Image 1 (tube, helix red, strand yellow):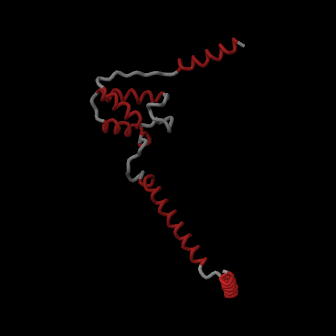
Image 2: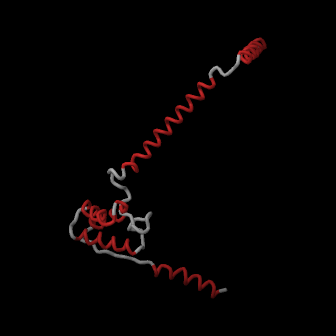
Image 3: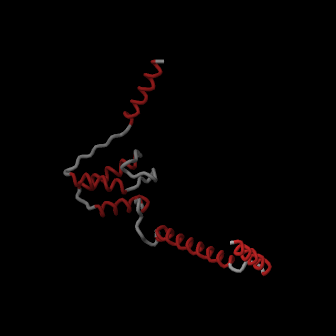
Length: 154
């Protein structure tokens, strides 16, 4: 029993040894903050739903190295993002830019919301019109009699 516990404990503790820990040297704190912000904004091309800061994929490691090197070369955030987009495409951005290709992506939620509101409005209007005058003459006379009878009792 003790051997099994020791085995489980050693396996649990050794998992951290396999994790890759990268450390980058920065001249000042502003470069470190820019690195963190850009690494959070750029998507890993392999992982798809992870940014390059969180991904352990080899390509994310390469992107972090390129990002670090370009920051030390003195490039601006815009220049770095342009380089990454030119090399890996718009997919590398978590927030794609608005252009002819992504216009549908940005406009679709607004268009779908407007269509849903129009359908809801016409549905509500149709129900209101359907409820008006739905009683036949016989039903209306019976309703009037019941209401009159109710008023006599009160």
